[in-house]
Image (cartoon, rainbow, N blue to C red):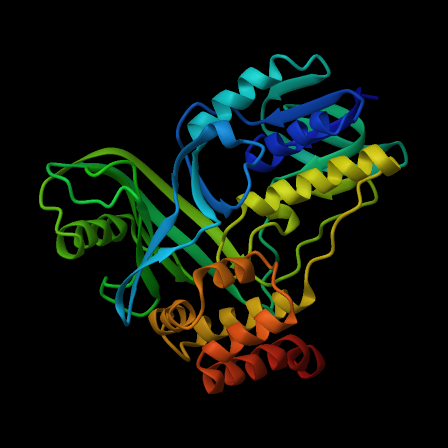
Length: 386
């Protein structure tokens, strides 16, 4: 039979923890079981996002900036993004906060061990962890499985290595994060620097690429050294922390509900923005909607994605994958010809048709038209003739 719960959440990363939090905030009643491989105690990742109002995890924001640097074809632009604020939450702070919060929730049980199987039968959905089977009314899983390869869809990776460095002298602008810095050598894939300053001498500095394959481990270290020493002019520094990440950038469909009472959440449920890799705010929107619809209707109702914005994601992925234009040129035109607030709304998929047209008119139209035709043929032409 197995132990029974009302809700089982597989994975206690950002998606799983956010969901159990929003379930409680919405007043959803029932026993909740949260499953995770092992306790999370390290600062294994950093989440960044932009918003206008205070979010649900505002006390955890480690640093915030109202200005962003962009370095591209026009050299440097220091952009004011008000009323938006660019915010940073460290994984270690998020996990510790949620552990304290969960200890006050009597309806919530946390168990550690490897989740080996998830399924659904005539008795309902179930999860197997460490040889034990748990059953629930609903199962929510954030365990990501890459979609199978298909010629109809694009598949890039956003991969990066970051160092928290302490420089020997003041070199960083503590009032502005660097969103993209293309002054690094462009050797093929999209490649840029990313800087989140803590103060004038301390920052998280990342070497980031968009490509189909990862680099050898030593190449990331070399890229960081080139960026710190050759571009930023930081000759002497101490590395305090290290992090490495890989984010899927794909327009392949991810099954949000593989069976009637099993629901995928987070990156596994399509929350990662295909063209940028940003995920945290989309996770919050998804978790909030699941919790609200469970409370109001007794079942989760998933928000359908924007077909228009998904198509534009596919066009950009096709352009970058085929190398029709450099990433530096694409993003330089985007930020040069649009107010940064419009760009952020566009990336949030919060723009209407008029602003979408303004954004599309600002790019290299012939290049994007070619990419659009290629993306459409790849999606539907390959399906018909391939």
